[in-house]
Image 1 (cartoon, each protein chain N blue to C red):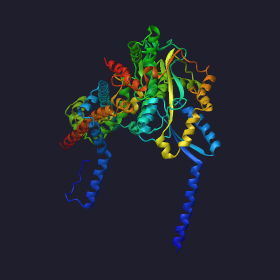
Image 2 (cartoon, rainbow over the protein chains, first blue to last red):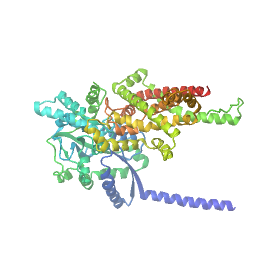
Image 3 (cartoon, chains in turn orange, cyan):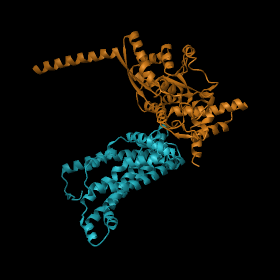
Image 4 (cartoon, chains in turn red, blue):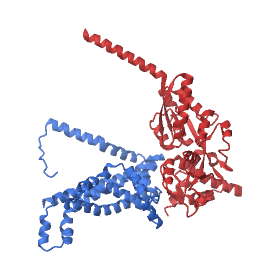
Length: 341
Length: 278
């Protein structure tokens, strides 16, 4: 008799507990957010808190964020291998495409006003204070007395942007001079710069650390990375080459995971929020170029367009770049093999 | 390990359970992953595996790994034996501290080792800056790799030689001395031969450990293919760029090297046991 009373009491307490847990769940939702390393500061300090405030006011629901920041390729692989991210903000389109090919993203993520991108940037050249080696453009990186740092394209998205920028700038300059793309001279430019590379770190962030440790005369990096260092009060001079690549960073919600977590609505709202004027201004303050045209106009003075800017399509798009530059017989792969002799 | 308990032939049930448990555990923990890797590497066929193993950057990285490991072993054999000698044969203040410090490289995360080495020998440091002025690079070049390996594997030779030295009979040395042998002769003809098996064991262990070193090397080498990229960093790069097949090829080679080294160690231990008996 006594035993059964205890049992009922226990069951009652348990039921109340469950009820509480369920009601708590509707008041709070968790988003798993996976991004590449460079925009960590702006997401962590600005975008995410601003969205939490916005969503709470709009719906009364609190959003908790589980954040992960890793090199773009590593992040993409982690998600493909089972990291249940609801949203991925990565450095390169091809890292999102990999998730689409793997069946994790089922919607057409490029079908919006911004073609799936959330921020832009440029590949730039950082140099030592006072510019002791008199660096003015890509050609100077090929000089015998200049040591160059950029990470390994095997592991780093930033390195791919660097190499794409150099190779594409070579093509662009030859096109301007002679009227047609000269692949041989672009290859020669990339080869002579690759020869000057001193250290190839595994990520863009690590390459900055190496450069700050005193190694190398120049660092090929993201414009937003350099601007962020300046924002932090560090002396970090850089130049934008006359011809360089427009870096376009994608963001996408991951269908399979949002459906599993039942977070589609809030995830969609976050992606939309990241494109809002408020968020775009925050990005712009942290060194990333806004994709929203109105905000871009506001910041036009901070972000002048280089004379001969091109984007990935100038090189034929990511699929072609992956094959023709980094594939088994790609330009960069062959240049590395030739360095054996 | 010397006084072997005589194993009884009649195993009780609990013995059998224990035995199969430990076999099963080792099988799951160690053998299964190895088998899985070998199977995976053979998925594309032997020819493809061979092609992956013999890619020029893979071969270069393997050569660099082995050559830097061998230089490290040569240095560690001398410094490790000397350190063990000092620790066993002399008594001095701070000896216990020194003895404890030797194991520090084992306890330390290797990436921390890399950071420390860059701090000491990097171009911004006093030592690194001094060498750079005269045109020598330590960090981000081969000397950096060797330094990192020396640091990470230092305890092996010391800890292999030390116990043998402690147990070594001084009678033979004294006998040699009474027969008129010089200290050098005694060291070379009496001490070294009896230490040799343990020195070689330590050397083999450090070599094997050096083949797979990653954490410190990725910090101190430049990681440039055909210049400063070692095997483990090459494997990491292939994995990261979605070429697991290419990574498996070189992984199998490293595994084979470890197996051979392990066999050498076992032969050495057998040899040293026989040496002790005589």
